[in-house]
Image (cartoon, rainbow over all chains, first blue to last red):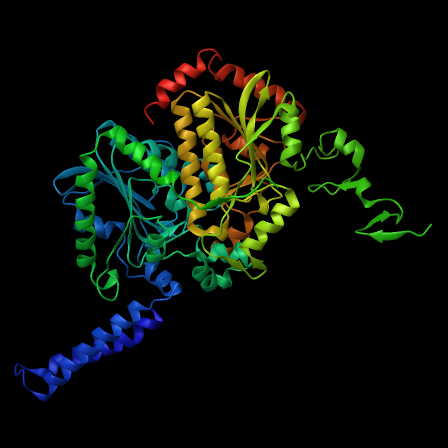
Amino acid sequence: MLEFERDLDELREHIAELERDAGADPNSQVARELAVLQLELETRTADIFAHLTPWQRVQLARHAQRPHTQDYLDRLCSDFTELHGDRRFADDPSVIAGLATFEGRSVIVVGHQKGRSTAENVERNFGMAHPEGFRKALRLFDMAERFGRPVLTFLDTPGASPTLDDEKRGQSWAIAENMARLARLRVPVIVTVIGEGGSGGALALGVGDRVLMLEHAIYSVASPEAAAAIIWRSSDHAEEAAAALGLTAPDLLRAGLIDRVVPEPEGGAHRDFDSAAANLRAELARMLEELCAQNVDDLINARYAKFRAMGEHQQAPAV
Amino acid sequence: MAVRRRGGVQSYPDVPVDLWVTCRKCGGMHYRPEFEAALRVCPSCNYHDRLDAAERIALLLDDPGEFREIDADVTAADPLGFRRPSGSYVDRVAKARALTSRNEAIVCGIGPLHGRPVALGVMEFGFIAGSMGSATGEKITRLFEHALRHGLPVITVTASGGARQDEGLFALMQMARTTAAAARLGEAGLPHICVMADPTLAGVTASFAAVADIIVGEPGATIRFAGSRVVQGTLRRRAPVEDHTAEWVLRQGMLDLVVPRRELRETLGRVIGHLAPAEAAAPARVTAKAARV
């Protein structure tokens, strides 16, 4: 539990206790007290979540109980069939991918997958994909184009795995090849940042016709720790880095780098997986409908133009 | 004559320190005129020292006098109002401009290689460690688009610390943007050759550079995805001691060639001769493809 959630949780526990004692009479003293506390909980939650600092959003995006890709797939898709392996080296459990039905349509889904328990996190490398994870994704992108199926991706990673073994297997190459493929893929691609959008490891699944972000998700050039290591030469300055990087969903919408912020239920997606998924479903369904109706050449030209426009520069006389 | 010791090496106050060069890799001391004549390649360890963009262009083209720079006026904005403990991003850019006499961390233009015009983009490491911000990405994208319009092969020379943190997600998106532009060039049948010089790191390695048709490493160049500070910051352990040199990356199967500097122009010219469309046919073919985009 996060520090700023603790007060709210105490209040919640208190309410639960009173509810057990309240009985059926809506006019009892206890029932009236309950109503007051309920209101206080709502007001305080709303107040805290209306003024989240960037670092608090980073904490929410990484919340241990936050829904991950698999949780969304369970709620958005009726028949997810997971497909494994890159047919080159190995199966990487930090990326899950497969076939599914979304709103009556066959789609290819690909996402980073974090674990919840320590054991699962070790198995899934904390959602930090290896090159073979990205190459599994690439294999499915190819399949999506071959069979004319749209692609939905879900971003939730601190970053690509940076070990020596990852370097040996060409981590940079894996990321770059995915971006190149996605940029030109002749089917609709919708990207959703559901938790942590960490650096190149996120972008390797992040080039699409639409880019959505959950309200408390983050998306950053480097994880706050990595950015702090680069800028302050110590990852202890992660909180300052988070504030400086402009990595929250509202910031990025204002910057024009994402298309839409998907609202989360009160208190964050981890408090109510179903509502979070329902909100996302509504946005994805609408966008997919719209994109599937487009001519494919127009689609990839618009995708090129979309990323082409990302950046701010100015003119200066040659030095 | 008074002798003082400086960095463990004897030097004389009336002799310009500039006359001697210390190899960045092995620490060997070399007489500068000889070192320059050897194209800044260390005679002891074969490390290929960093070149600035002008030196690189002079090395690569048939006649550097014929190099026509494009987009020299494109420079960084400050989308986040970013400030480091050491100062503002605006000041960093101003200092970099003064230091390098460039507006950005890449110099782009058209010039002749083996008698054929090529689109050449050379990163300027002296400009904020060759980091890629929006303006850098804009110039790289324009270079690929220019080459596409005119049916030219592209040569990029990378020397970069990666994405420029001071621009946040704007910097990350330059990876997608430049890679998309490179991919579109490939669809038109125009080759892209990338020379990875020292150092080529992170957001530049993992974008337009890694999707080149031919990737050439310079001997001894550090080429890697995660810099040691990032590895230490995220994994909380010391970065692996491996070298990550071009030769090592070649053995992993990620580079096509490692080419000594003296042979670079000849090699690039030969490779492009094989891959680039015959010059007379090129414009028509590209126009047909480009009409779609």
